[in-house]
Image 1 (cartoon, rainbow, N blue to C red):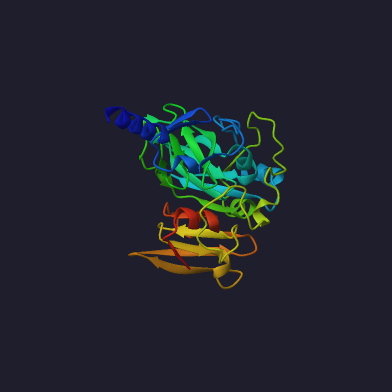
Image 2: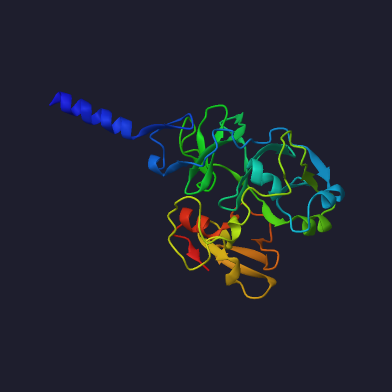
Length: 297
């Protein structure tokens, strides 16, 4: 009987532990079987750790009029991270004002989120693990090799397991339009230290396809999977096509808070008018998969 119990306990331990891309997954917060290899090995998609920036004037010559960018404004400093660069790197370790930050972007989910990178009194440097959860990038910190889920907004394994990430207010906008209104903004340079063709996308055509490369728990097919959508306060999902008119603003009340949303159908822009860390834009399938209980507008 004792031997049976020992075998049973050992099987439980094995079932809760695995190694993927060199990361030890011991009792992670998400099912091990749902953690998939995206193809590249750890750091096969290299993070940008020493970012360089250019002026808005020069950026308009480097990037085309359709370029989108992840925007952050802190303490009077404005920075823009073009999607054409983020498609190839997914992570930028940077600093804005007095804050250490990590800029994250998942091309498969269309999700761009900027987080503080200081946890437990330490500034963490992040990289791309090469692993995915529900098609979304799993980051890792190079100090402890804990895995962090971008859209779960927390670490799912390792020393930091369960630690919530702290998102900062950001927007996903047309770069040229933003620079016209904010000529003092700094823009991430294509001089990244890596040889990449930033004029082309490794995911060309993906945005238009009503399918995903990897299996996900999509709970609604009412909208195109890649419909640009906005998640507010983790409780409300607003698909762009659900809004009337080519462009405009509308106030939504979520709980006790009110959020003014601005949209532009032609530019596929959808964001909270005021800077808010409670507003995240991404493809519809990604938001609905990670927040299945959120109401859809």
